Length: 252
Ligand SMILES: Nc1ncnc2c1ncn2[C@@H]1O[C@H](COP(=O)(O)OP(=O)(O)OP(=O)(O)O)[C@@H](O)[C@H]1O
Image (cartoon, rainbow, N blue to C red):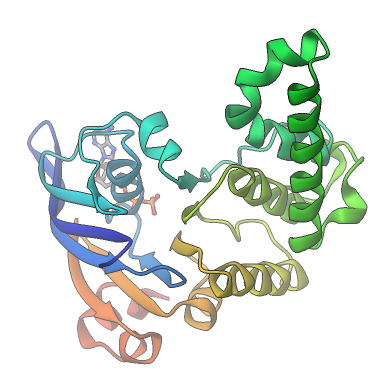
């Protein structure tokens, strides 16, 4: 069974069909990119999957559950995390604090215990710190732990945001344009990070305009145009797909 399964998902805004009958699957450990021209429906698709807007028709199944109509925080608690186009890391916090804030959903219940110095709460706090440091290591930003996030390059801030999204347990990560503003070396680092996460079994859905990155990192690519899936396949097939060349790549 696929981790994520979309079956004829449709979304309309006041009569405009932003998505029409979009279907695809994503397995654990797979990286799937969603590409398409501006206004093709990529953000709408992310929002429909994560519960930020309702899909008007079709089904969205995640980890065997129908999540259509569920609130975003409920879907997120099932292990689906996302980042946003305009970045979501807290600029005034340190990198470590950002990652801990991603964990806070899981540790909030222990806050009162912590206040009263209860041993269980202290143990939970130690665990949270250990997990945050392990994640910083995994993402290659351990040396930045105590730096203020606002002082980092935009590429480093993107990695911090992804790390924060991973802090609570994630089986599926949705990344909205993670390579925006990244230098070539930061992009290479991001690619290695994404492949590493996939190798650990995390599924990744990626909206990205940087075609080189998409081609290099994706197992499969879905192409949207005017809200419809016009192609879906491996990078090499997408690169030479006539409808894609006409609708998207041909414009570059
Ligand atoms: N809240 C909304 N109300 C009305 N129309 C919307 C809304 N959100 C998106 N749309 C429309 O739905 C269509 C798809 O937009 P969407 O933002 O999903 O495209 P996109 O592929 O993410 O574009 P971009 O690459 O520019 O981010 C567009 O025609 C857009 O104008």
